[in-house]
Image (cartoon, one colour):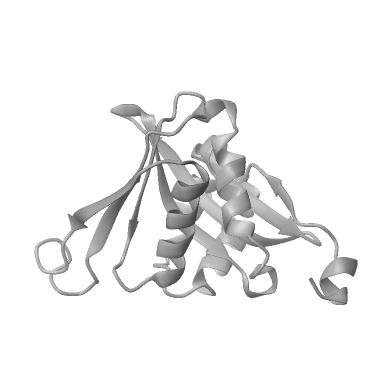
Length: 169
């Protein structure tokens, strides 16, 4: 840690609110290769899924965001939709910290599995979820969820379903 980081204000984690939707939209737009959704979608993520999502705040700015939800037909599975960490918050383990924050919430008491999708070339996301599986002493398995040709009409990379678990929460 350099001196600038040591003197910096701490990053706080909290449940997002609808008022965070616009800031989340801007953050995600600044975090390629993440797909931008509509601002309305980010408003819904920040309000409807606030129990299973997290906003990371530094000096009143949203510098990190994870959207997730418990699968309706699988209450033991948390699906992580997107992980975004802004440039000024990178290199501090924030994504891992945000994931652990969500897993410790009452809404995740029954969670035994974590799922997400990752494109084959997104090394940062693979490293994050491989590290999480390792920290949780859980298996990580993957398979094709949405195929480039079959589901995306050739306009998006294949999304691999990554499943971690079972975990002990």
